[in-house]
Image (cartoon, rainbow, N blue to C red; front, side, top):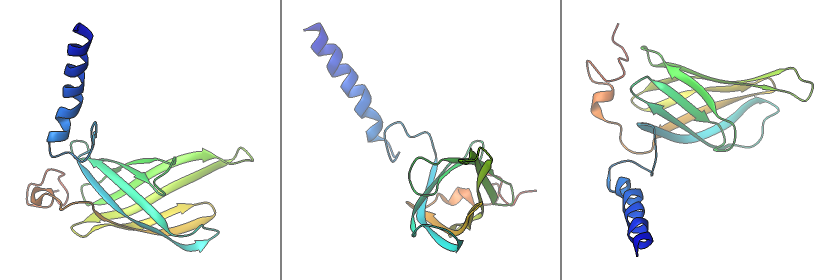
Length: 146
């Protein structure tokens, strides 16, 4: 009987965050953009989906170029420019840097994702409408405030 009560309590605790405005249980980010990563030059694969999430408090971003195992970490500057990077080692044990250089604005995130063998265009848009306070004077990110 005691185990049943404990199990019910744990289940209720796990489901409670689902009643909030967050997109998923345990999400630690504040904002999310989704869109396409499209080849421009070099030896690239086909176009695919990309996702970027951001924590507004410290303006940190996480970008996944193909919604897979590669995760680039970076930060958004006060001017809206952002850079996220991940340095891997190639089969020859030499550095194989991955980099997103983009601009965050009201429309979304536009930029380039580059590797040593490929350059791709990134176009991401909010998964849901962005809060107005993000770009308002005195905004929570400080973008555009000197």
